[in-house]
Image 1 (tube, rainbow, N blue to C red):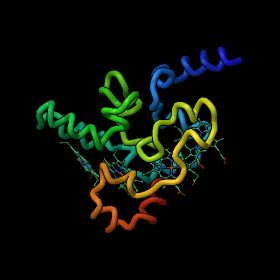
Image 2 (tube, protein in one colour):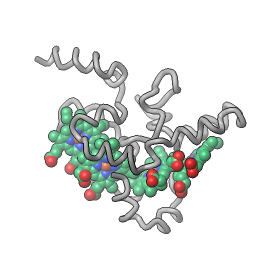
Image 3 (cartoon, helix red, strand yellow):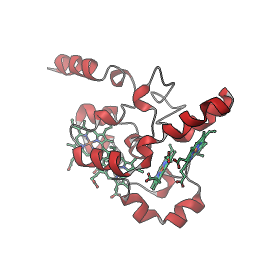
Image 4 (cartoon, rainbow, N blue to C red):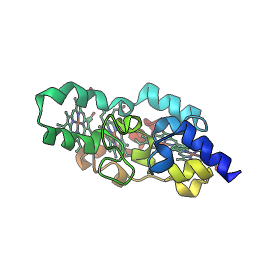
Length: 144
Ligand code: HEC
Ligand code: HEC
Ligand code: HEC
Ligand code: HEC
């Protein structure tokens, strides 16, 4: 059984099977509503477009600076590396807020995903000031 599950994972999420971040498609089967709201209402699901637009106007070093906020898990284990190697992580997805989801996807257990979130999670990418003007609560619910 375990073997079959592994084979299935390898078939459907070739990269997911070997990394900690799996990308938003992997969440869709079990969290359809959150997935659809996120795609429909949150610009975070398209955050790479802005980077792509600027790509030719900045240096490769500057481009890497953008990855830290505009992709999922850049610089972290199993996170975004490049558009070619990790296309499923190029936008800021679910795991930017909920943390790497591989183990949760495999086990379906809530303890392997961050459920309760605080503004701390947003701070690396959103300045504290911005979080305050947005007001954290309504902003949060805007996620999906
Ligand atoms: C194979 C099904 C499955 C997949 C795939 C899946 N989840 Fe879940 N998820 C669950 C189940 C089951 C629960 C527990 C639901 C409950 O207890 O009401 C859950 C709960 C959660 C919770 C709430 C945790 C809490 O503490 O209450 C979050 C957040 C979550 N999932 C996010 C994700 C994200 C992000 C992904 C993709 C990386 C994902 N899930 C993929 C099945 C899945
Ligand atoms: C510290 C985190 C951070 C870094 C680094 C960063 N961004 Fe952003 N960027 C954001 C956030 C957050 C927003 C959304 C601002 C808002 O709506 O309040 C944003 C918005 C944008 C937008 C506007 C999107 C739109 O359609 O309105 C573009 C374009 C953009 N960033 C491009 C870039 C580029 C190119 C780089 C690298 C040179 C970069 N960003 C680096 C966090 C960052
Ligand atoms: C911008 C941050 C952010 C992103 C991105 C995000 N979420 Fe959430 N998510 C939250 C917050 C905040 C909560 C509510 C947590 C709480 O009640 O403390 C939540 C709650 C949840 C829950 C628990 C049930 C519920 O709806 O309250 C699930 C399941 C979930 N998210 C799945 C996902 C999935 C799947 C994605 C990607 C398609 C995603 N989230 C993207 C912030 C985010
Ligand atoms: C890894 C970086 C990162 C983290 C962490 C992050 N965000 Fe974002 N967020 C972005 C970027 C980048 C944008 C701009 C997307 C664009 O416009 O292209 C953005 C845009 C937004 C927007 C405005 C546009 C929209 O509708 O999506 C809201 C609201 C938002 N984020 C909420 C949050 C909250 C709340 C948290 C924490 C729970 C959070 N974000 C965590 C990177 C991040």
